[in-house]
Length: 506
Image (cartoon, rainbow, N blue to C red; front, side):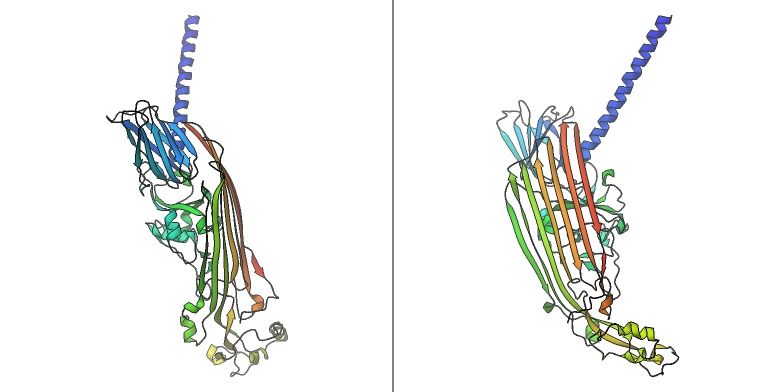
């Protein structure tokens, strides 16, 4: 009796162990399947099903995806249902080769897009494996048939060809559906504050997606967040020519994208290739080709003067063919701008009736801080006030005009540059890695943050942003892949105040 009970106990425990192992295997399989299906946010993947001419699935077929640009190759085998998936592929053109015993080799040329899943379904024909069937695949569609994700791709050609007045890569978000202009804040002069094309008062990328708040847009750069957490705006702006492509995901995006409630703007940077390539550019804008503003015409004032130059270069190529590649982009911005502004200031006659400390305060400015003293004056009656000790006819305030370091149409006066460098390394067909470094530096002259008729109190600002990323992807087998990233960013926006900076453009 005791022996039988013990045998039953052993049997029960054995069955429980088998069930536990089975549940663990199923759970692990599901987790791995999810990983294979989605991969990294900035990378793409190729998946599909392989069948024969009768429609029967082919198991154990070898599927290889080879990058046309770098020659890097990844491979896998089809499963019991004829399915395969090759995740975490750098966006670009790929040659997909499918081979199996007793079947002709099938070779397809297709495009992998950022964050996209490219479907390559093939039907193999019985015959000699030395015969190759070439098929030209299509690019990814806006509606992903596997995840039902809805997105708009801004590809390499569009990035290079579409016009952008300020060369802000996020301008092209407007091309997507379900997108509307975001609310912008104006400064005291009524003009929208921009820094090299970036609206610093907007959140997100300056657009509202799906009617949500701008801050509800997730901003990714090479798969990691590129946002200022405090303001919710873009973290580091990168040169347009450093961008490979990006997608605007507007619906049904997966949990891997994080905290987005409206949409996701997913940008990937350029990598090098087996061929050397490069470009150089300069974009110039001059006030000579612009009209005067409405306010200046009404006040009979001359138009502001500005010169804006943006110039830079991009170069990339192999350091070791099929192994090590580099890409580097640098862009400079130089703006010189003097806008004619009008303000009200206390008159000299009125200051004579004020307290000694007030007179001393204004007397510290020395020379007249403004260019014109011929503007309209306002006495107590015009202002609707009564000031004891000062005659009613005494002019109290005077409208003056002056040239300030302000935006006359070409952005605020500044010296700025943006750098983005990237190195890719194919250690083997199972391990790929890349490192990226970016830097954005803008020095905006006194008057950008605050200007007035007294230049001693003009305040400028500076932007000093740095970022770094190291990414490594390793494939263990057809069912297990790991992708790891180490990201660091440093975003600063200090204000500058210099009481000695009393000079003004003439």
